[in-house]
Image (tube, rainbow, N blue to C red):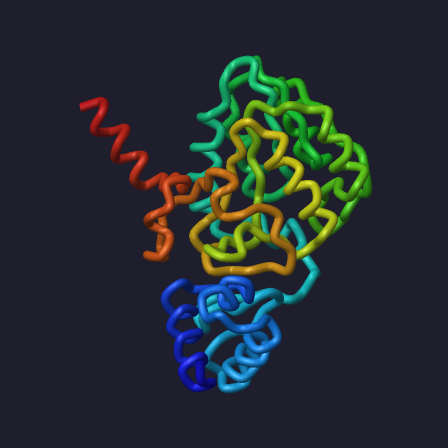
Length: 261
């Protein structure tokens, strides 16, 4: 395939899908990996796509190359209404005798405000979460490992290894980015390690993400887009509407209201 035609096809795919990986492009266009990477560099230089690690995203998608997390106190007040709706729904899913994993993060922290099930056992990697759970009358256990101040999370290889002894019935995990091709992502590799293990160890893993997280990509992917159910207030990107594992609270509320009529 000639260069101009190949560039045209790549651009079409990126605009249609929102993001693509190098591997997908090599398979679709029958070109070598080195050729595809050069093509992506050309399109990126022309300002037509965003070249990211492992592929490319559309111009309207955001890729955060920084490995620095924003401080917890700042993030707590971001998208407050959406986080509240997501937290309420998540808490309603907890049942008696559940072994619950509660990831560090501001949305998961909000879940604690709405927990009514005291017959469940809670495990978390956030010191603040553990304290609030015990104060609320819940049985809480905290994982060991390296403490990360900016996110107030316990993370790293020791934490991930300790999680292997738990068979969680349900878990709630935060994310920095949601992308169709690059999945759920976070800036820090140590946190990604724990989140990835949480998804694996939970019978029912739920990712909590407000609409502002869609089309966002952080440096480290911890799960594919269909590896866990996603709880959000509403789907604002049409390219995600066919995914059956996204729980859109706005529609769930309407469905429940119809059942009670």
